[in-house]
Length: 216
Ligand SMILES: [Zn+2]
Image 1 (tube, rainbow, N blue to C red):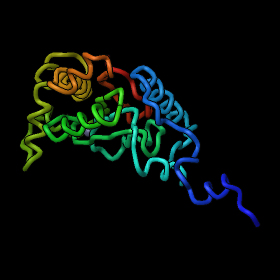
Image 2: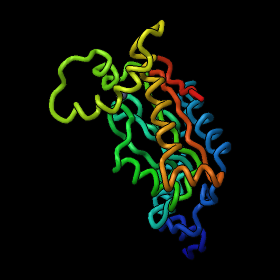
Image 3: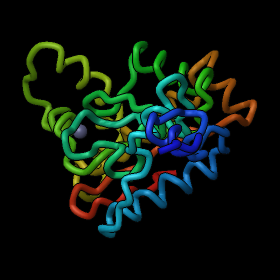
């Protein structure tokens, strides 16, 4: 049997003949729309698990163009590719308990916006975050967890006296504060925003519903 070129390409998973996907950068509003649509599919039980095929792996093996950066908590219940129904090469993910930033996290984000073309950075806090709760509870914490608590403390101080659930209020405030730190981060991210190459947005994930809401 003579194999046709497309069949051979499919069989071998040759990247250049794989279906076109997100190689062209999209703007921040389109990126946010894409995240929102993916989250909607996930929470309604209609996830399509895009970009997880053999051909997608081949397509992104040599290069990547993630359309969004997600800075979220390491918590096991909010994996970005799952809650936004995305796949390989779609999201550049930075995860640390309490979704706070240090120089390593910041350097990672700078790389994604400057060199990979991501057009949105989402700082994603979440319901019942253990790192935020530890900070609100103000008990003794061990080892390097102290460093995370120290980073979350300003948000906890700011929500003191507010009505409602203290942990939930602090989660939201912390995501907003981290987003603000990023927006003012010089030279790279602040310049990237100033040049209108992208946006930083704080958001909140509900463990109960699976829904992500904007905090802007
Ligand atoms: Zn958390």
